[in-house]
Amino acid sequence: MNILLVGSGGREHALAWKLAQSPTLDTLFAAPGNPGIAEHATIAELDVTDHRAIVDFVRRQRIGLVLIGPEAPLVDGLADNIRSIGVPVFGPGREAAKLEGSKGFTKDLCARVGIPTARYFRVTSKDGALACLDDFGERCVIKADGLAAGKGVVVATTRAEAEAAVADLYANGPVEAVIEEMLEGPEASLFVLCDGTSTASFGSAQDHKRVGDGDTGPNTGGMGAYSPAAVLTPALEERALGEIVRPTIDALAAAGTPYVGVLYAGLMLTTDGPKLIEYNVRFGDPECQVLMMRYTGDLAALLLAVAEGKLADTPSPVFSDDVALTVVMAADGYPGTPKTGGAIAAIDVAQADGAVVFQAGTTMKDGHLVSNGGRVLTVTATGADVAAAQRAAYAAVARIDFPTGFYRRDIGAKALIEG
Ligand code: AMP
Ligand code: GLY
Image (tube, rainbow, N blue to C red):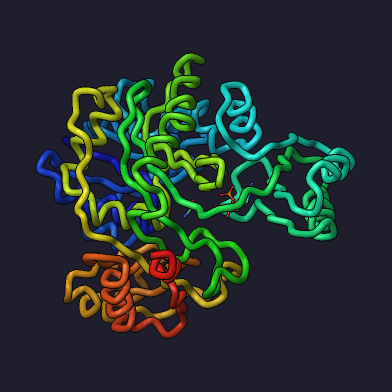
């Protein structure tokens, strides 16, 4: 089977690395890819926003499965356009992708079918937003409705912070937003494969969203992760599946807009049980990197079974008992304007003891690898427990020569404290 992988980040490098190990793969194409992905795939020079060009390529290259990595093309309806020519796609169509594309859509769905989540109001004007604040006391969370690459959320702990966030949100005119109650507890991410009707758990992870050590500084796309997330015990996972994920999948199927792909549920493990913070309609980045290090099966066959609606006939995914941990090396300036063109060397040395360096914002310049984005490398390793995986990942990080980059030094630390 030929596969087309859409995307160019560390997540897609990890998917390409794992797909390349699949006995059912013939040729892997990637669009637009990056130098790391190019080690496992043939790069297709395609503009991902040009759906017609992608559909033509899929026909021409006899692609048997399209795997869409990032959210933007999913929200844009790329999966629908490829399915319209009868080719299986791993990734939801435009309507189901609203689970990530519109926070208001997801909150209304939760309210309709009784999914536990933060109490909320949808607002469209500054006055409407300010009026809601009274309902939440000092603490609330303000979220712009659409895709915001992790930057559209303000967690306000005082009324003044909340008012400032509302003023910011409405600085350029009316927008849709959600204002909600602040939830408390440890966070965990649960990944669930869905083929429209059936589901299969695909493991858990914990992300590190803030740029600085000790969860300080601005939010990012994620500075590191580990899997599994021990806080999400099997009993809590079963509750999250039964109370949150399955009712969502059933509601979308009943609406005639079935969910096909991986659903990423961001959960808060509150004293009242798991509550939904948000959905993403794709693998997390860098959470995908740690999941791929632990998944032991034939990824191409599994994703095809999802895309063809055959999950019920497929054995449950099996993961290694090891912990995987990844450290993001970002370019100076991230999450603001990152410094590009910084030299990167010694990736081979870093990989000598079994760590894998997945590339994200990299490019080749005059035959040398250089930085070309905010998150540049995700350095990933496994171990018998979090401490061992952490040691192995940081040993690999220390061997990489990337003077214009930086990284957090405490990925996994909270898991060690919480035991
Ligand atoms: P989101 O983009 O919705 O994932 O939000 C980014 C981060 O904001 C989450 O990972 C949480 O840490 C935090 N957050 C979002 N919603 C809430 C909430 N209702 N209560 C507490 N924290 C939240
Ligand atoms: N790492 C968070 C995300 O992929 O949304």
